[in-house]
Length: 343
Image (cartoon, rainbow, N blue to C red; front, side, top):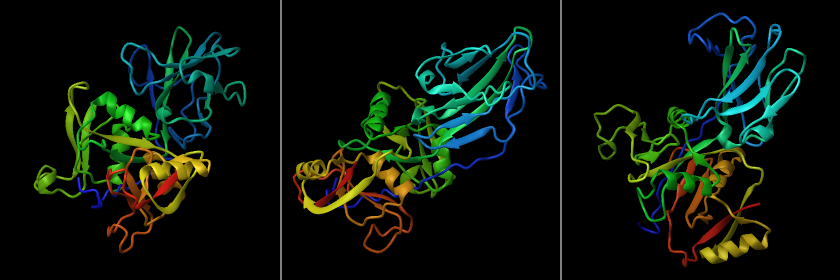
């Protein structure tokens, strides 16, 4: 890899907005669509959008109460085969939380027929579909809602070069950059907003994909249509690819120090400011959510050098779209770059 050449890593961002759509209703016993008797269709939205660190309410309201019943909230995705991912169960009097979400989950209880689920301090892994199920022993019924964490998808590559991660290593690599492995839906939304990337990467479900907007010979051929190219399920242990990571807003902030530093000096100068070198996900978050715009390359925690561009201009990567540009992983002894710190 040329240590000085800029790898143009223009990655578009994407956001979600509230979308009024119909929820999915079905009988748990019969497995068919039916008219709800006890539960109300979500009165406004079946998809709720929020940012990491925020509090959110997933609506679930009853028309009236059966004599005896339970309400069970379950997270449906990502799926864990053979294990029901229960979040909370209530009998109308008491409630109990379960699993990793349980300590942050509670019922809103705005009035006696309200069984809406409140989740505090949202995390990246909370993204997905949730089911509110009323169980009365005769006619169980449920509504399904989607919680979307607003964020940004970015491709991530090992410092050792292209296609160095198995699935677990890709997951750990994203986690180390303040992110999670992206879902297919997150990658698809990023593609619809302009993400075009030729290297294949792992997603959280163990599949491998890459998004193409402009078909070209080096990316599967010019005759193939634009879209999400798929390698399908791969061996999570023996197959190696890059990663598509997903992150959201952070509690802290990223700032730039403009001295010419090597990697060790960059670590120290951030430490002197009561900070540490920023992770890649934190830089993407600052670019996407806070509009960070710098034309100067700076060291990051993983040893890469990057810079965020909100307003494209000459001599700043020479691209027409905003994005985070990358110099790759230069020699850590080079004293050519500043530092992006996170505090």
